[in-house]
Image 1 (cartoon, rainbow, N blue to C red):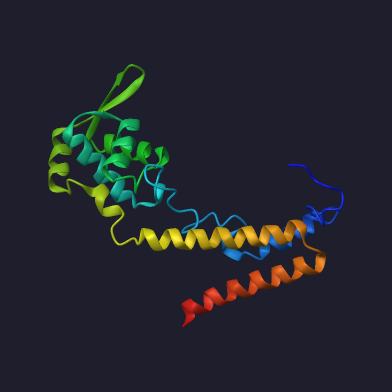
Image 2 (spheres, rainbow, N blue to C red; image 1 turned 45 degrees about the horizontal axis):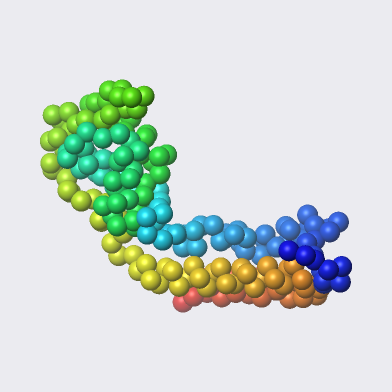
Length: 196
């Protein structure tokens, strides 16, 4: 993208560090990228949904239920959960593999190497526990979540950030200051909604 020399203000110059800190502070707990939920929530079907935000028990129950069908590799379980949940939940490897190790330590599953990967299988004790639990725990993770409302919130948040970024990149020092005041005021009003 070509830039002309007369194109307003660009990124902060020599006082960039101080200005960046002011900008970051304006967002409070959200951070400048709105990275946490709900803005960092689902990115569409099949792309992870709430990701690793499910409870540890959900991961455990899902692994046991899957292995009740047939032996599987860890990566295969992640893909199966994403598919069977309709894309609303795809647990991260960081939640699945430690859970597999824990289940193996408890004697509920065993593993054997197969082509450089571990193939996990239920033990008799694991089958008993799997049989006592839900057959479709991955469907329960997304229940009670209004995905349509969540998407509206994300769009509003990103639109807000886009407008702020435009002012920050091209606005004058006074305009940037006004933008910071708007952001801080909006943040306070959001918290007041909870207080009511």
